[in-house]
Length: 121
Image (cartoon, rainbow, N blue to C red):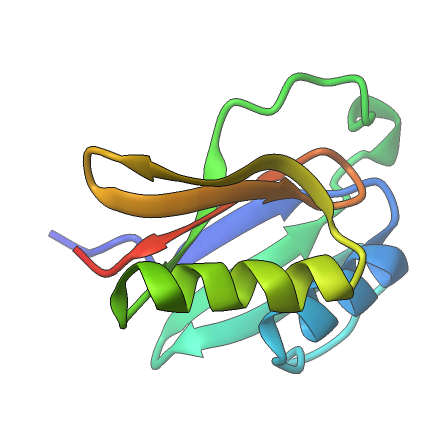
């Protein structure tokens, strides 16, 4: 059985989202097209921005999934990422707090997609 290797995030403005994620994760896209921009996050694994049929993707659409970034180093490392991202002006949905799996926080991208930072499992 093949493992999932493509993770799509729906966005309304691909250029804006590309700037946001490039800056936030400090990565560059593999290629840039008008409606699809992939980032290789591990060998053979893509995290991609996709506008699809942009008239169907709106900021008012509820976002029920999350992009996750697991950070090594415990609570102090989570708080450090939070301060770095806050300095970049991200929209904070949940400030750092302790959850059953460790320290965590949640921000959103310009389209309301959720991004959770947590410790490495």
